[in-house]
Length: 85
Image (cartoon, rainbow, N blue to C red; front, top):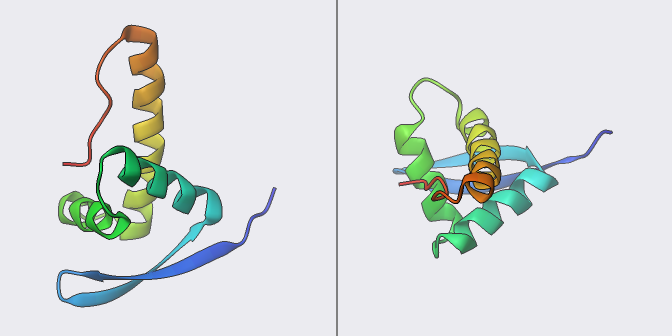
């Protein structure tokens, strides 16, 4: 299955940054931001600050996967869901 990537431009710190992700990842990140009562740009900024040496694109993908994995495990165990902050 091949999906097209969508480019979105954010201001990260004082720099404009272009991020390309598959539509499904953008939808997941929008969903996560809404669940955390924040804007997508704020979520991206938070993740950028803690990403270390990873690329921002990779950090966003890994966060989305980790978030939903944590949610699945929490549903099974009755625990809290991973937060970006």
